[in-house]
Length: 315
Image (cartoon, rainbow, N blue to C red; front, side):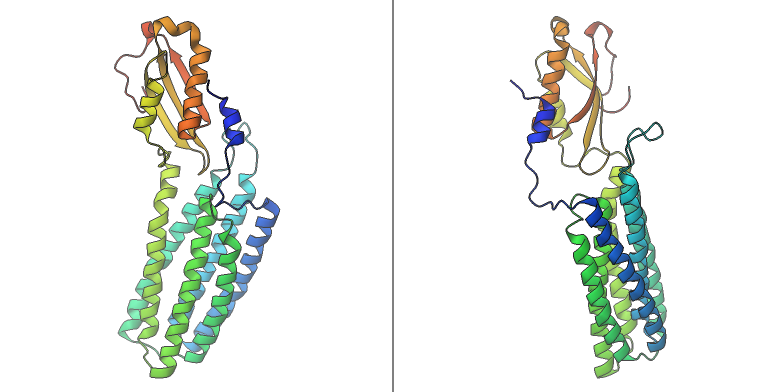
């Protein structure tokens, strides 16, 4: 006999890779990171202008984008906790997906801008004060590493915080590149290395953004959960005793953790009196084999079933 799907959900083992942090503690971490990045951005911009280093200014702009990303993520976390209401019957959790899209888009814009600025500087490399670059790059590395550590344990299972973590991680690596560039300028007076590192930072930023933005867009487009083999699911549901066929199927995710499904199920004529048992069996299959705990099923009698209905999508 199948277990009740709600009991299955409650008894499922938690992913040991997920670190559960209470909301208040998570908010404090994000708030600390906001202040740290804000102060660092001001210091890097002033130092970059004084030292004549585009790489330092590029890192400062990236840090500023991190601060903006932190503010967006902080606000999204707060809003996402609101309960469902008459205006937002699905609740507010998808605001974190919107925040992630904004943050990834900002990374792409910043990356393209830095490539342009770096190319212009490659043509006519300015004089750069290497010591300023190394010192401020070192300070930035400490702050960026701290910020990445604050968000690392929060980013598993949250596309919003993962976008934020990638901002922080790319900043830390950018700071390493800035320090290396400043050192080369000090030792060998290679001026073109500053814009060259800027372009390298920009390319890395673009790589991170384009690698991750696809998953966010899938969520917003209500794509089928990537971990679910939909054809196998259709076969499993169709094999439930009493099910003639299934059509009009939709799969989607409210967020990264919650998979949902709705479908029309045609019940065999001689099993029509077993609707509740068939529904229970289908929901148990969805929960046990595919991790879907939220499903809406509409049952059809074979004498009144939709003709030539497609398996997926609307009738």
